[in-house]
Length: 241
Image (tube, rainbow, N blue to C red; front, side, top):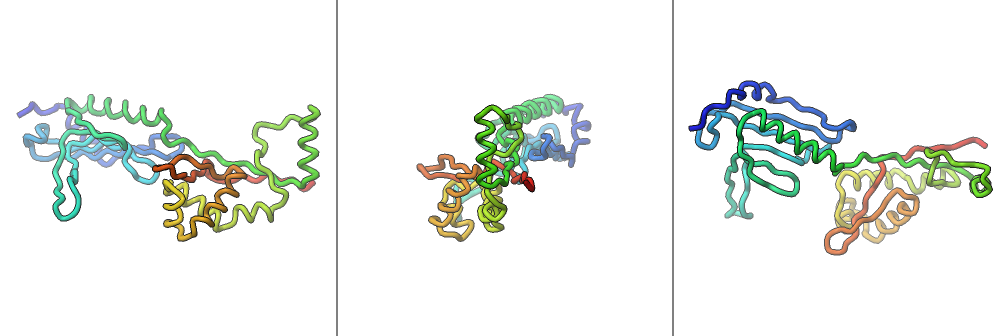
């Protein structure tokens, strides 16, 4: 039987704590540490789970020494317990517990690596403007003549009226954008199933929003296209002249 880790009691003090791991509150860390009877599987008398989650609660990283793994499917499936392992969204590997300080150091190293890779980038706000054809024409001509230099925070997308903008950003379409952000569908077919809307109708709507920069498409499984929303919302700039 292994000699008991003298730092065990200190690690137990972290049980139940959580920490928001990025400035935007999209990732968070959780510690679960319990004292259990000493056994060959847990020679230190410690059951631990150190995890990193995204904003939807999905586990991005976990260091565990008691994790159920389901093998197979259907009535014949069975569950076994894995001890001392770590896993991310993409892989699973074994981790040999040495002492509490090393365990935490290794965990934080991987947490920081995930955050540094920016797997979940902060979504920006799309700035849009309202201008009549004549107003927008004057703006572009002034830029061409060198009489006006647009500020970096000026809109990149313009509508002629609030009515035109409201057609593109109707309640129904805003709900659609929110669903895409939340569920990240892998194809238009999947999105159609989630919304109950016809695929052809969705395609037309999304193509319209693509023209305004609200939606983009990336390659999904099997040559399918997956819609994505790169913005968290819209900021309106409008003058009365």
